Length: 451
Ligand code: ATP
Ligand code: MG
Image (cartoon, rainbow, N blue to C red; front, side, top):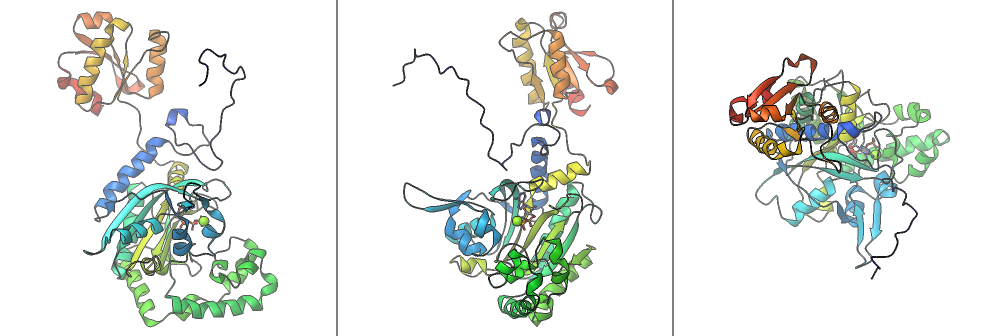
Protein backbone atom coordinates (compact mmCIF):
# COMPACT_ATOMS: atom_id res chain seq x y z
CA UNK A 1 0.00 0.00 0.00
CA UNK A 2 1.23 3.50 -0.78
CA UNK A 3 1.85 5.65 2.28
CA UNK A 4 -0.74 8.46 2.08
CA UNK A 5 1.44 10.76 4.21
CA UNK A 6 4.48 10.34 1.93
CA UNK A 7 5.68 13.49 0.17
CA UNK A 8 4.57 13.56 -3.44
CA UNK A 9 7.26 13.24 -6.09
CA UNK A 10 8.48 16.83 -6.39
CA UNK A 11 9.15 16.73 -10.11
CA UNK A 12 6.03 18.00 -11.91
CA UNK A 13 4.89 15.42 -14.46
CA UNK A 14 5.20 16.50 -18.10
CA UNK A 15 2.01 16.52 -20.17
CA UNK A 16 1.33 13.55 -22.43
CA UNK A 17 0.40 14.51 -25.98
CA UNK A 18 -2.11 12.63 -28.15
CA UNK A 19 -0.86 9.84 -30.40
CA UNK A 20 0.54 11.23 -33.64
CA UNK A 21 -2.09 11.47 -36.37
CA UNK A 22 -5.00 11.20 -33.90
CA UNK A 23 -7.03 14.33 -33.23
CA UNK A 24 -9.07 15.87 -30.47
CA UNK A 25 -12.33 17.25 -31.80
CA UNK A 26 -13.02 20.34 -29.71
CA UNK A 27 -15.53 23.15 -29.13
CA UNK A 28 -14.86 26.30 -31.17
CA UNK A 29 -13.61 28.50 -28.33
CA UNK A 30 -10.66 26.21 -27.54
CA UNK A 31 -9.71 25.61 -31.17
CA UNK A 32 -6.59 27.05 -32.68
CA UNK A 33 -6.95 28.33 -36.20
CA UNK A 34 -5.13 25.55 -38.03
CA UNK A 35 -7.09 22.79 -36.33
CA UNK A 36 -9.89 20.55 -37.47
CA UNK A 37 -13.47 21.86 -37.61
CA UNK A 38 -15.13 22.30 -34.23
CA UNK A 39 -17.22 19.69 -32.47
CA UNK A 40 -20.47 21.57 -33.14
CA UNK A 41 -20.01 21.17 -36.88
CA UNK A 42 -19.51 17.41 -36.32
CA UNK A 43 -22.82 17.26 -34.51
CA UNK A 44 -24.50 19.29 -37.20
CA UNK A 45 -23.09 16.89 -39.81
CA UNK A 46 -24.59 13.94 -37.94
CA UNK A 47 -27.98 15.63 -37.70
CA UNK A 48 -28.06 16.28 -41.44
CA UNK A 49 -26.91 12.71 -42.16
CA UNK A 50 -29.63 11.25 -39.96
CA UNK A 51 -32.30 13.25 -41.68
CA UNK A 52 -31.19 12.58 -45.25
CA UNK A 53 -30.50 8.86 -44.77
CA UNK A 54 -33.81 8.27 -43.04
CA UNK A 55 -35.57 9.59 -46.14
CA UNK A 56 -34.10 6.66 -48.06
CA UNK A 57 -34.89 4.03 -45.43
CA UNK A 58 -31.34 3.58 -44.15
CA UNK A 59 -31.12 2.27 -40.58
CA UNK A 60 -28.44 2.87 -37.97
CA UNK A 61 -26.01 0.19 -36.75
CA UNK A 62 -22.91 0.13 -34.56
CA UNK A 63 -20.27 -2.58 -34.79
CA UNK A 64 -17.07 -2.99 -32.73
CA UNK A 65 -13.95 -0.93 -33.40
CA UNK A 66 -11.87 -4.08 -32.83
CA UNK A 67 -12.30 -7.07 -35.15
CA UNK A 68 -10.32 -10.25 -35.83
CA UNK A 69 -7.35 -9.44 -38.08
CA UNK A 70 -8.41 -12.23 -40.44
CA UNK A 71 -11.61 -10.34 -41.25
CA UNK A 72 -9.66 -7.60 -43.01
CA UNK A 73 -7.04 -9.88 -44.54
CA UNK A 74 -9.82 -11.98 -46.09
CA UNK A 75 -12.17 -9.12 -46.82
CA UNK A 76 -9.91 -6.41 -48.17
CA UNK A 77 -7.24 -8.60 -49.81
CA UNK A 78 -3.73 -9.41 -48.70
CA UNK A 79 -1.91 -7.13 -51.14
CA UNK A 80 -3.91 -3.96 -50.56
CA UNK A 81 -2.18 -0.90 -49.06
CA UNK A 82 -4.37 -1.14 -45.99
CA UNK A 83 -3.59 -4.76 -45.15
CA UNK A 84 0.05 -4.56 -46.22
CA UNK A 85 1.06 -1.54 -44.20
CA UNK A 86 -1.73 0.49 -42.61
CA UNK A 87 -3.36 -1.73 -40.00
CA UNK A 88 -3.00 -1.45 -36.24
CA UNK A 89 -2.83 -5.14 -35.38
CA UNK A 90 -1.71 -6.99 -32.26
CA UNK A 91 -1.94 -10.29 -30.47
CA UNK A 92 -4.12 -10.34 -27.37
CA UNK A 93 -1.77 -11.62 -24.66
CA UNK A 94 -4.64 -13.11 -22.65
CA UNK A 95 -5.84 -15.59 -25.26
CA UNK A 96 -3.61 -15.26 -28.33
CA UNK A 97 -6.35 -13.69 -30.52
CA UNK A 98 -5.06 -11.71 -33.50
CA UNK A 99 -6.92 -8.39 -33.42
CA UNK A 100 -7.04 -5.20 -35.50
CA UNK A 101 -8.43 -1.70 -35.04
CA UNK A 102 -10.82 -1.45 -37.96
CA UNK A 103 -9.33 0.40 -40.94
CA UNK A 104 -12.75 0.53 -42.62
CA UNK A 105 -16.31 -0.39 -41.69
CA UNK A 106 -17.71 -2.54 -44.48
CA UNK A 107 -16.02 -5.82 -43.49
CA UNK A 108 -17.28 -5.49 -39.91
CA UNK A 109 -20.84 -4.75 -40.99
CA UNK A 110 -20.86 -7.69 -43.38
CA UNK A 111 -19.44 -9.90 -40.61
CA UNK A 112 -22.23 -8.78 -38.30
CA UNK A 113 -24.95 -9.40 -40.90
CA UNK A 114 -23.63 -12.91 -41.57
CA UNK A 115 -23.42 -13.60 -37.84
CA UNK A 116 -27.03 -12.48 -37.28
CA UNK A 117 -28.37 -13.99 -40.50
CA UNK A 118 -29.70 -10.51 -41.04
CA UNK A 119 -30.63 -10.79 -44.71
CA UNK A 120 -32.92 -13.76 -44.06
CA UNK A 121 -36.05 -11.64 -44.42
CA UNK A 122 -34.83 -9.55 -47.29
CA UNK A 123 -32.40 -6.78 -48.14
CA UNK A 124 -31.29 -4.06 -45.71
CA UNK A 125 -30.07 -0.48 -45.94
CA UNK A 126 -27.68 0.37 -43.11
CA UNK A 127 -25.40 3.17 -41.96
CA UNK A 128 -22.89 3.83 -39.23
CA UNK A 129 -20.50 6.56 -38.11
CA UNK A 130 -17.28 6.09 -36.21
CA UNK A 131 -13.50 6.15 -36.06
CA UNK A 132 -11.30 4.18 -38.47
CA UNK A 133 -7.59 3.57 -37.96
CA UNK A 134 -4.87 3.49 -40.59
CA UNK A 135 -1.15 3.80 -40.01
CA UNK A 136 -0.53 6.35 -42.78
CA UNK A 137 1.77 9.37 -42.92
CA UNK A 138 -0.26 12.10 -41.21
CA UNK A 139 -0.86 15.24 -43.26
CA UNK A 140 -3.71 17.63 -43.93
CA UNK A 141 -6.79 15.51 -44.57
CA UNK A 142 -4.97 12.27 -43.75
CA UNK A 143 -4.87 10.98 -40.21
CA UNK A 144 -4.24 7.76 -38.31
CA UNK A 145 -7.59 7.96 -36.58
CA UNK A 146 -10.26 9.48 -38.77
CA UNK A 147 -14.05 9.38 -38.84
CA UNK A 148 -16.22 7.96 -41.56
CA UNK A 149 -19.84 7.89 -42.40
CA UNK A 150 -20.42 4.42 -43.80
CA UNK A 151 -23.46 3.44 -45.78
CA UNK A 152 -24.27 -0.05 -47.04
CA UNK A 153 -27.16 -1.39 -49.15
CA UNK A 154 -27.12 -5.15 -48.55
CA UNK A 155 -28.87 -7.80 -50.64
CA UNK A 156 -29.60 -5.54 -53.62
CA UNK A 157 -28.33 -6.65 -57.03
CA UNK A 158 -29.71 -4.10 -59.45
CA UNK A 159 -28.18 -0.90 -60.81
CA UNK A 160 -31.19 1.03 -59.45
CA UNK A 161 -29.84 0.90 -55.90
CA UNK A 162 -26.37 1.97 -57.12
CA UNK A 163 -27.93 5.07 -58.63
CA UNK A 164 -30.15 5.66 -55.58
CA UNK A 165 -27.12 5.59 -53.30
CA UNK A 166 -25.15 8.01 -55.48
CA UNK A 167 -28.14 10.35 -55.61
CA UNK A 168 -28.45 10.10 -51.85
CA UNK A 169 -24.86 11.29 -51.48
CA UNK A 170 -25.70 14.14 -53.80
CA UNK A 171 -28.65 15.08 -51.60
CA UNK A 172 -26.49 14.85 -48.49
CA UNK A 173 -23.77 17.07 -49.97
CA UNK A 174 -26.40 19.57 -51.05
CA UNK A 175 -28.00 19.57 -47.59
CA UNK A 176 -24.55 20.40 -46.20
CA UNK A 177 -24.37 23.43 -48.48
CA UNK A 178 -22.00 22.03 -51.12
CA UNK A 179 -22.66 22.78 -54.76
CA UNK A 180 -22.41 20.14 -57.42
CA UNK A 181 -19.64 20.75 -59.96
CA UNK A 182 -18.50 23.96 -58.28
CA UNK A 183 -17.46 22.33 -54.97
CA UNK A 184 -17.76 18.58 -55.47
CA UNK A 185 -18.19 16.32 -58.44
CA UNK A 186 -18.78 12.67 -59.16
CA UNK A 187 -16.35 10.24 -60.77
CA UNK A 188 -17.64 6.79 -61.67
CA UNK A 189 -16.24 3.66 -63.20
CA UNK A 190 -17.03 -0.02 -63.50
CA UNK A 191 -14.69 -2.78 -62.39
CA UNK A 192 -16.66 -5.50 -64.17
CA UNK A 193 -16.55 -9.03 -62.79
CA UNK A 194 -13.54 -11.05 -61.61
CA UNK A 195 -13.13 -12.99 -64.90
CA UNK A 196 -13.30 -9.78 -66.93
CA UNK A 197 -10.75 -8.25 -64.63
CA UNK A 198 -8.48 -11.27 -65.10
CA UNK A 199 -8.50 -10.79 -68.88
CA UNK A 200 -7.79 -7.10 -68.47
CA UNK A 201 -5.11 -7.84 -65.94
CA UNK A 202 -3.09 -9.99 -68.31
CA UNK A 203 -3.33 -7.32 -71.00
CA UNK A 204 -2.23 -4.75 -68.44
CA UNK A 205 0.72 -6.78 -67.16
CA UNK A 206 1.84 -7.28 -70.77
CA UNK A 207 1.72 -3.53 -71.36
CA UNK A 208 3.53 -2.67 -68.13
CA UNK A 209 6.23 -5.30 -68.76
CA UNK A 210 6.81 -3.74 -72.17
CA UNK A 211 7.40 -0.42 -70.37
CA UNK A 212 9.30 -1.85 -67.39
CA UNK A 213 11.97 0.85 -67.55
CA UNK A 214 9.44 3.60 -66.79
CA UNK A 215 7.99 1.94 -63.67
CA UNK A 216 8.76 3.28 -60.18
CA UNK A 217 9.70 0.95 -57.31
CA UNK A 218 6.15 0.70 -56.05
CA UNK A 219 4.86 -0.22 -59.49
CA UNK A 220 7.58 -2.78 -60.03
CA UNK A 221 6.72 -4.40 -56.73
CA UNK A 222 3.05 -4.50 -57.64
CA UNK A 223 3.48 -5.56 -61.25
CA UNK A 224 2.58 -9.18 -60.52
CA UNK A 225 0.88 -8.93 -57.12
CA UNK A 226 -1.63 -6.14 -57.82
CA UNK A 227 -1.08 -4.44 -61.19
CA UNK A 228 -4.48 -2.74 -61.13
CA UNK A 229 -3.37 -0.63 -58.19
CA UNK A 230 -0.58 0.78 -60.35
CA UNK A 231 -3.27 2.70 -62.23
CA UNK A 232 -4.07 4.45 -58.95
CA UNK A 233 -0.51 5.78 -58.56
CA UNK A 234 -0.01 9.29 -57.24
CA UNK A 235 3.47 9.56 -58.83
CA UNK A 236 3.36 12.35 -61.47
CA UNK A 237 6.22 10.71 -63.42
CA UNK A 238 3.99 7.66 -64.08
CA UNK A 239 0.90 9.52 -65.28
CA UNK A 240 1.47 9.34 -69.03
CA UNK A 241 2.31 5.63 -68.83
CA UNK A 242 -0.91 5.04 -66.92
CA UNK A 243 -2.95 7.08 -69.41
CA UNK A 244 -1.93 4.77 -72.23
CA UNK A 245 -2.61 1.49 -70.38
CA UNK A 246 -5.24 -1.01 -71.60
CA UNK A 247 -8.68 -0.14 -70.25
CA UNK A 248 -10.91 -2.55 -68.37
CA UNK A 249 -13.95 -1.10 -70.08
CA UNK A 250 -12.74 -2.75 -73.32
CA UNK A 251 -12.77 -6.18 -71.62
CA UNK A 252 -16.29 -6.09 -70.20
CA UNK A 253 -19.00 -8.59 -71.08
CA UNK A 254 -22.59 -7.68 -71.97
CA UNK A 255 -24.06 -8.00 -68.45
CA UNK A 256 -21.42 -5.74 -66.91
CA UNK A 257 -21.89 -3.17 -69.64
CA UNK A 258 -25.65 -3.21 -69.16
CA UNK A 259 -25.31 -2.71 -65.42
CA UNK A 260 -23.03 0.27 -65.95
CA UNK A 261 -25.25 1.73 -68.65
CA UNK A 262 -28.29 1.45 -66.39
CA UNK A 263 -26.54 3.28 -63.55
CA UNK A 264 -25.46 5.99 -65.96
CA UNK A 265 -28.94 6.33 -67.42
CA UNK A 266 -30.47 6.76 -63.95
CA UNK A 267 -27.91 9.41 -63.02
CA UNK A 268 -28.50 11.23 -66.28
CA UNK A 269 -32.27 11.10 -65.79
CA UNK A 270 -31.72 12.77 -62.41
CA UNK A 271 -29.64 15.48 -64.04
CA UNK A 272 -26.45 14.48 -62.27
CA UNK A 273 -23.31 15.27 -64.24
CA UNK A 274 -20.46 12.84 -63.77
CA UNK A 275 -17.13 11.94 -65.24
CA UNK A 276 -16.21 8.39 -66.20
CA UNK A 277 -12.78 7.84 -64.73
CA UNK A 278 -11.34 4.57 -66.08
CA UNK A 279 -8.48 4.85 -63.59
CA UNK A 280 -10.78 4.80 -60.60
CA UNK A 281 -9.98 1.43 -59.02
CA UNK A 282 -10.46 1.89 -55.22
CA UNK A 283 -8.20 0.54 -52.50
CA UNK A 284 -9.95 -2.70 -51.52
CA UNK A 285 -10.08 -5.90 -53.54
CA UNK A 286 -13.71 -6.58 -52.73
CA UNK A 287 -15.18 -4.18 -55.26
CA UNK A 288 -16.85 -5.16 -58.56
CA UNK A 289 -19.06 -3.42 -61.14
CA UNK A 290 -19.96 0.15 -60.08
CA UNK A 291 -17.34 2.19 -58.21
CA UNK A 292 -17.55 5.91 -57.53
CA UNK A 293 -15.91 8.81 -55.77
CA UNK A 294 -17.04 12.31 -54.91
CA UNK A 295 -14.00 14.54 -55.32
CA UNK A 296 -13.10 18.18 -54.78
CA UNK A 297 -10.36 20.48 -56.06
CA UNK A 298 -10.43 22.55 -52.86
CA UNK A 299 -8.50 20.24 -50.53
CA UNK A 300 -5.16 19.81 -52.26
CA UNK A 301 -4.07 16.23 -52.83
CA UNK A 302 -6.52 14.77 -50.29
CA UNK A 303 -9.40 15.52 -52.63
CA UNK A 304 -11.59 12.43 -52.29
CA UNK A 305 -14.32 13.04 -49.75
CA UNK A 306 -16.41 9.96 -50.47
CA UNK A 307 -15.62 6.62 -52.09
CA UNK A 308 -17.78 3.60 -52.68
CA UNK A 309 -18.82 0.77 -54.88
CA UNK A 310 -20.35 -2.63 -55.30
CA UNK A 311 -18.98 -5.65 -53.45
CA UNK A 312 -21.09 -8.60 -54.60
CA UNK A 313 -18.46 -11.17 -53.60
CA UNK A 314 -17.77 -10.07 -50.03
CA UNK A 315 -20.48 -11.97 -48.17
CA UNK A 316 -19.32 -15.23 -49.71
CA UNK A 317 -15.66 -14.39 -49.18
CA UNK A 318 -16.37 -13.90 -45.48
CA UNK A 319 -18.18 -17.22 -45.17
CA UNK A 320 -21.74 -16.05 -45.61
CA UNK A 321 -24.45 -16.88 -48.13
CA UNK A 322 -23.76 -14.93 -51.31
CA UNK A 323 -25.46 -11.53 -51.30
CA UNK A 324 -24.92 -8.56 -53.61
CA UNK A 325 -24.24 -5.22 -51.96
CA UNK A 326 -23.05 -1.67 -52.51
CA UNK A 327 -21.73 0.92 -50.06
CA UNK A 328 -19.55 3.94 -49.50
CA UNK A 329 -17.30 5.58 -46.93
CA UNK A 330 -17.26 9.34 -46.51
CA UNK A 331 -14.37 11.03 -44.68
CA UNK A 332 -15.87 13.41 -42.12
CA UNK A 333 -12.67 15.41 -41.44
CA UNK A 334 -12.20 16.06 -45.15
CA UNK A 335 -15.79 16.95 -45.71
CA UNK A 336 -15.96 19.41 -42.81
CA UNK A 337 -12.60 20.90 -43.77
CA UNK A 338 -13.96 21.46 -47.25
CA UNK A 339 -17.00 23.25 -45.85
CA UNK A 340 -14.70 25.34 -43.64
CA UNK A 341 -12.31 26.08 -46.49
CA UNK A 342 -15.14 27.28 -48.69
CA UNK A 343 -16.39 29.53 -45.90
CA UNK A 344 -19.81 27.89 -45.92
CA UNK A 345 -21.99 28.42 -42.89
CA UNK A 346 -22.28 25.82 -40.20
CA UNK A 347 -24.70 26.36 -37.32
CA UNK A 348 -23.60 28.07 -34.14
CA UNK A 349 -23.11 26.17 -30.93
CA UNK A 350 -23.55 29.27 -28.76
CA UNK A 351 -26.17 29.31 -26.00
CA UNK A 352 -29.12 31.67 -26.43
CA UNK A 353 -28.51 33.21 -23.03
CA UNK A 354 -25.91 33.46 -20.27
CA UNK A 355 -26.88 33.98 -16.64
CA UNK A 356 -24.97 36.71 -14.78
CA UNK A 357 -25.39 36.40 -11.00
CA UNK A 358 -23.80 39.29 -9.04
CA UNK A 359 -24.35 37.84 -5.54
CA UNK A 360 -24.23 34.21 -4.45
CA UNK A 361 -27.44 34.77 -2.49
CA UNK A 362 -29.32 35.15 -5.79
CA UNK A 363 -28.12 31.83 -7.14
CA UNK A 364 -30.97 29.56 -5.89
CA UNK A 365 -33.59 31.86 -7.46
CA UNK A 366 -31.54 32.16 -10.64
CA UNK A 367 -31.21 28.40 -10.97
CA UNK A 368 -34.95 27.97 -10.61
CA UNK A 369 -35.57 30.35 -13.50
CA UNK A 370 -32.90 28.71 -15.66
CA UNK A 371 -34.56 25.32 -15.17
CA UNK A 372 -37.91 26.83 -16.12
CA UNK A 373 -36.38 28.37 -19.26
CA UNK A 374 -34.80 25.05 -20.26
CA UNK A 375 -38.23 23.50 -19.84
CA UNK A 376 -39.28 26.01 -22.53
CA UNK A 377 -36.49 24.91 -24.88
CA UNK A 378 -34.06 27.75 -24.17
CA UNK A 379 -30.32 26.94 -24.15
CA UNK A 380 -28.89 28.89 -21.27
CA UNK A 381 -25.51 28.74 -19.59
CA UNK A 382 -25.16 29.40 -15.87
CA UNK A 383 -22.19 31.37 -14.54
CA UNK A 384 -20.89 28.83 -12.05
CA UNK A 385 -18.71 29.80 -9.09
CA UNK A 386 -14.98 29.17 -9.06
CA UNK A 387 -12.72 28.73 -6.00
CA UNK A 388 -12.93 32.49 -5.45
CA UNK A 389 -16.69 32.67 -5.77
CA UNK A 390 -18.72 34.08 -8.67
CA UNK A 391 -16.29 36.90 -9.59
CA UNK A 392 -16.97 40.52 -10.49
CA UNK A 393 -19.78 41.64 -12.81
CA UNK A 394 -17.11 42.66 -15.28
CA UNK A 395 -15.55 39.20 -15.39
CA UNK A 396 -18.99 37.57 -15.63
CA UNK A 397 -19.94 39.73 -18.60
CA UNK A 398 -16.63 38.87 -20.21
CA UNK A 399 -17.56 35.18 -19.94
CA UNK A 400 -21.03 35.91 -21.25
CA UNK A 401 -19.55 37.59 -24.35
CA UNK A 402 -17.08 34.76 -24.88
CA UNK A 403 -19.89 32.20 -24.75
CA UNK A 404 -21.37 33.76 -27.89
CA UNK A 405 -24.78 34.11 -26.18
CA UNK A 406 -27.15 36.70 -27.58
CA UNK A 407 -28.51 37.70 -24.17
CA UNK A 408 -27.28 38.05 -20.62
CA UNK A 409 -29.85 37.34 -17.92
CA UNK A 410 -28.84 39.57 -15.02
CA UNK A 411 -30.06 38.47 -11.58
CA UNK A 412 -29.31 41.72 -9.70
CA UNK A 413 -30.70 42.27 -6.20
CA UNK A 414 -32.90 45.20 -7.35
CA UNK A 415 -34.46 43.22 -10.18
CA UNK A 416 -35.07 40.20 -7.96
CA UNK A 417 -36.74 42.43 -5.35
CA UNK A 418 -39.25 43.41 -8.05
CA UNK A 419 -39.71 39.75 -9.04
CA UNK A 420 -37.85 40.41 -12.29
CA UNK A 421 -34.76 39.44 -14.25
CA UNK A 422 -32.98 41.85 -16.61
CA UNK A 423 -32.60 40.58 -20.18
CA UNK A 424 -29.64 42.40 -21.72
CA UNK A 425 -28.84 41.97 -25.42
CA UNK A 426 -25.13 41.29 -25.90
CA UNK A 427 -24.89 41.98 -29.60
CA UNK A 428 -24.89 45.37 -31.26
CA UNK A 429 -28.17 44.77 -33.12
CA UNK A 430 -29.91 43.48 -29.98
CA UNK A 431 -31.81 46.61 -28.85
CA UNK A 432 -32.45 47.81 -25.29
CA UNK A 433 -32.39 45.92 -22.00
CA UNK A 434 -35.82 44.82 -20.70
CA UNK A 435 -37.17 43.40 -17.44
CA UNK A 436 -39.07 40.12 -17.47
CA UNK A 437 -41.04 38.46 -14.64
CA UNK A 438 -39.46 35.50 -12.86
CA UNK A 439 -42.86 33.97 -12.22
CA UNK A 440 -43.99 33.53 -15.83
CA UNK A 441 -41.04 32.50 -18.05
CA UNK A 442 -43.48 30.68 -20.34
CA UNK A 443 -44.78 34.09 -21.47
CA UNK A 444 -41.40 35.43 -22.66
CA UNK A 445 -39.05 32.44 -23.27
CA UNK A 446 -39.85 32.73 -26.98
CA UNK A 447 -38.08 36.12 -27.07
CA UNK A 448 -34.83 34.28 -26.25
CA UNK A 449 -35.50 31.38 -28.59
CA UNK A 450 -36.45 33.31 -31.67
CA UNK A 451 -34.30 36.43 -31.43
P1 ATP B 1 -7.13 7.86 -50.25
O1 ATP B 1 -7.00 7.48 -51.69
O2 ATP B 1 -7.24 9.34 -50.03
O3 ATP B 1 -6.09 7.21 -49.38
P2 ATP B 1 -8.95 5.72 -49.72
O4 ATP B 1 -9.32 5.22 -51.05
O5 ATP B 1 -7.90 4.99 -48.95
O6 ATP B 1 -8.54 7.29 -49.78
P3 ATP B 1 -11.42 4.85 -48.58
O7 ATP B 1 -10.88 3.65 -47.95
O8 ATP B 1 -12.23 4.74 -49.79
O9 ATP B 1 -10.23 5.90 -48.83
O10 ATP B 1 -12.22 5.67 -47.47
C1 ATP B 1 -13.31 6.53 -47.80
C2 ATP B 1 -13.02 7.96 -47.43
O11 ATP B 1 -12.45 8.07 -46.13
C3 ATP B 1 -11.99 8.64 -48.29
O12 ATP B 1 -12.57 9.09 -49.49
C4 ATP B 1 -11.54 9.79 -47.43
O13 ATP B 1 -12.47 10.86 -47.48
C5 ATP B 1 -11.57 9.18 -46.07
N1 ATP B 1 -10.24 8.74 -45.65
C6 ATP B 1 -9.56 7.63 -46.03
N2 ATP B 1 -8.38 7.54 -45.42
C7 ATP B 1 -8.30 8.63 -44.59
C8 ATP B 1 -7.33 9.11 -43.67
N3 ATP B 1 -6.21 8.44 -43.42
N4 ATP B 1 -7.58 10.26 -43.01
C9 ATP B 1 -8.73 10.95 -43.22
N5 ATP B 1 -9.68 10.54 -44.07
C10 ATP B 1 -9.47 9.40 -44.76
MG1 MG C 1 -5.84 5.32 -48.61
